Length: 218
Image 1 (spheres, rainbow, N blue to C red):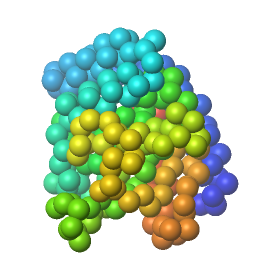
Image 2 (image 1 turned 180 degrees about the vertical axis):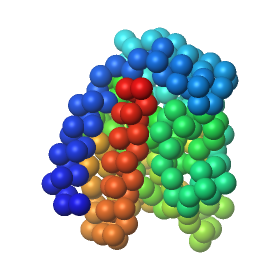
Image 3 (image 1 turned 30 degrees about the vertical axis):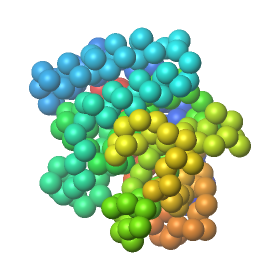
């Protein structure tokens, strides 16, 4: 699909997702699909959103970061959860399964920070190479985080599921950014990422936004 069509679709989905979530409907859908526990987590999420609605940005970041880090178990194997090698789950799916990988955490945090009114340009889902095993290790894994920029030139704050507290990028020397994106579909540093993989991830991003929109309009 041509890139301009992706961008038109992403713009349409951004407009759709900018409307407030109907948590009553979403809780009912969660119970139908996953049971009473999932419904309770959705209602808890609604309470969190309500409490944070008029809070400063940093408080919103901390509240949403803590919520999803506490409510979802990190499980880095989509095959076991979804039967697919690389599946990007909606927040409802992650809550329903009570599991998720790094993409699922980042997507959920992005969606509900946007719900809280954080401007799109301040948030970027960022693919990184994460160094594991300490500063002298040569072991790296692909990982996704959510980055928050107070201004376009600010040092970003990092929301991560591996290290629960929010830290400025300068304190995350274990992370090496590859490329970033948000629902405008604009890839940053794309020249450092394989073109085919960028297109695949953009396709996954469109797909998960479509499914989030469908969940919100059941």
